[in-house]
Image (tube, rainbow, N blue to C red; front, side, top):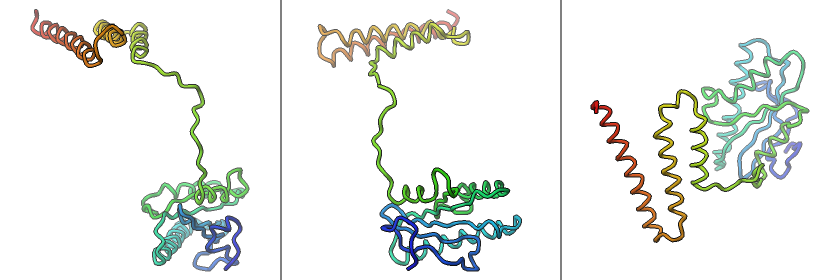
Length: 230
């Protein structure tokens, strides 16, 4: 078997010495397998790209090759996601072409979900080898919040809503009086809930519900009266 350039513990097929004529734009750098996925690393020979027609041919050639790799894996009982990592040389004068190749990964009418495509620049800070490593053996990182999280109770949210009502613009003036009443009602309910002299929580919940029901009943009666011209 040909020698792998890296990730030896995952390598199943190494770098090829020469590109087959049927795949002259895509050189195989290695095929890797882990418990996560099957990864194919190819490098592009942009020197043989001549015009839009040739570009479309190379695109379909890449699709056909990756499907053959996938079919070969299935024949051997390997059912896993397939990822392709393309290495492009940062050569001058081919920026437009490289941008179009970058967009292939988002072309679902082309790959139809058969594989994912990643395009990396040779010699970049994050290159193909880094991408392959992340695909084959992703590292777990513990999430750490950037700032300390301050716990806020319901009363704090009611106070913030009250502050926003005071600073409301002209468009919200009509809604300010009923909204303000509701905020004050919520504050009273929160104070009621925290009162240690009250009965059990179920009784507190019933009292809070009664306060809210009474407020809603009064507002609905006022709205009906206004609608009827009373």
